[in-house]
Image (cartoon, rainbow over all chains, first blue to last red; front, top):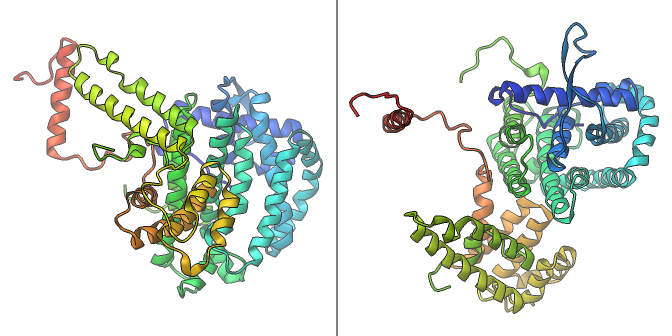
Length: 304
Length: 202
């Protein structure tokens, strides 16, 4: 998926962190079991959030056991037991990755294209399997991808229009979790806002690269429209940062409204952490260009 | 409303809320403030007052909805059929509402038009355009409470407000002397409750 939805670790309690990790671990194993070995390497913490939301909305119990993990084969760690509880998250992860790979082949740079070409064959069969179970969802995702292509051609589209495809995609993913009409409607809006957040964050994350390579980016269009002259070197211009701030803030504010309306109880602390701290922290680190591993300043001092 | 408070703010529902949503919000508030729960409690008067306020607000909104003129006393437009558009938005027919609005001649677009356009964008999740339209409506007609409320709500979120954020997150930074004393006194009373004592002199 995208990798922008994650918890803010410093504010997590130990047991929350362990549950969070065990869910991630469980999804990874579930993907391996149902979709094949290769698919598990494309997993991100976004899927863990989706699984936790799923279990929280449907008030499912979480079973955990100590198991070995392929990333750390020498020690056993807590791992959620694979079952129907995690299957939605792993299926969605496969669906979204498949579409992203196809998208990469169509318009990304050479390296990404090559990687996507290598990975895609491993996703054909899992994709078909996932489609059988969630055909509607898969159709909606394909539709959103088509909309994405047409939005990218429209050079005058505002940020709202540019966000729409991703937002609709996440809307479809989250509305599926609801048990009744009311919940479905709230979750749909929740997903929509989350999709907007992801898209704007992603656009900011890719901005420098897109400026250098001349790729599509809605923020470049914004800068052209408002006469911001920036060559992609150094810090982001202030006007652009402010614009992203308000766009992200409004999406998160509305997302919080939906989140409150859901009145979730299970895994509340972890979900609170992700919704109220994790998302903002992710966005802030993207804004300060500390999000990608290459940029992470591991040795330098951090001021708190 | 007689006491001057906006009924929609009192119930915490949007102006476009349906009857069901209003009822749900009302039930929730009644549960919270019903004076029976405050029997023998000094807060009873406050609860009574609050209940009266809630009842009044509820009646007013329900009347508005039933008369099919939801909050139309707040604003209307002479240039197009704004009641019809409001009705479309309220029933969730966003696409049709947008179509009607886009057919209005650009020269005839007034504050009401920008407000309704903003509401359509808001419902669709196009918050940037919604905010721009709300602020345009508000700047054309600054005295309108409805436009100002819509702008305010989105405006506070635009500045980073998130509903339901647990207290304690990010709030441990500015500790001043007074709040420190307060904490100590609270801690002392807690200790005394349990039979201990933190500050022996008080």
